[in-house]
Amino acid sequence: GPAMTFRVDVDASSLLRALDQLGAKADAYVKAAAKETAEAIAREARGRVARRTGQTAGAITVEETYNGEGYVVFVGGERTHIGRFLEWGTQYMSARPFLFASAKLEEGPHRRRTAEALQRAIDDVGLGS
Image 1 (cartoon, one colour):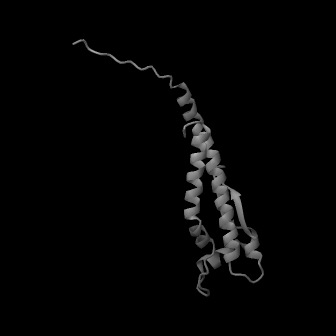
Image 2 (image 1 turned 45 degrees about the vertical axis):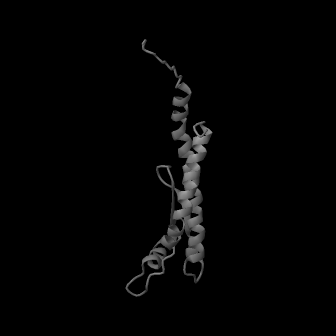
Image 3 (image 1 turned 90 degrees about the horizontal axis):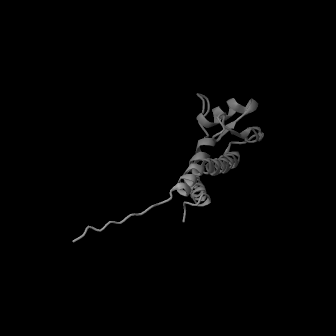
């Protein structure tokens, strides 16, 4: 019998536009999730750090990375060396980790925040439906 043909014309311009927008949206949402995680780590670390004067807890800082893509949590100012001594210990003092323990606690929540951020970006550009 006669051969049947079937033709479909698809306008992919809206899909391509959405894909172009996705990267920037995802970057913005993931960066916001990273800030939330960094602030949670800092809060936890402030509560966990060994205290005498509270100065080390007060020196726990959240700053944007130099490249602007994320955040870093650290003990700043004049307390930098004290934070390092507490975290890693010295030959005279055993370690009393507070910063990396706090970061470890945020691993799961950060994964969840990142996944939610990516889903919001996908939904916002119209790819989620």
